[in-house]
Amino acid sequence: MLMGFAAAPAAAANAGVEFPYDRGDMTFIDDGDVFKVCDTKADGHGVTGTLRGINHLTGKIVNLKSWDDGGDSGCDGGNYDVRGNSAHDMVLCWHGGGPCKVSRVFKENE
Image (cartoon, rainbow, N blue to C red):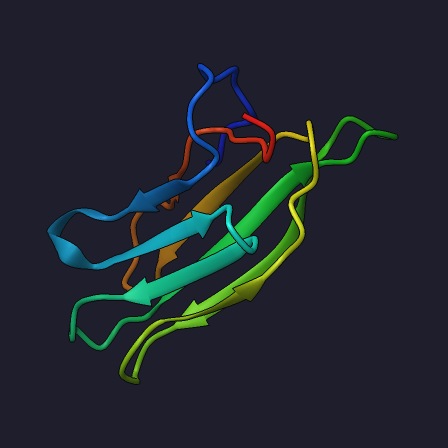
């Protein structure tokens, strides 16, 4: 079960989340609003990284964009314009089972 947003201390806007045992990671790079999702273990299971935000009309957490990686060399990902003071987090799921990992909450203007 995934939990909701929680307050996070101010920090650099770059953020990330990773699985133990080098199974995969997801990184946000503020310069250019770039997201990278990497399957880092040749175990036959890929990873999916999802960017989430809050819908300010409903107050609900929504999935904004997802990227998959696995079965090829290198990482996958792309750009998504993370704006101003809106709270976001990232969810990384390993296709081999088990719970997903959730990053800290981040904002572009931190």
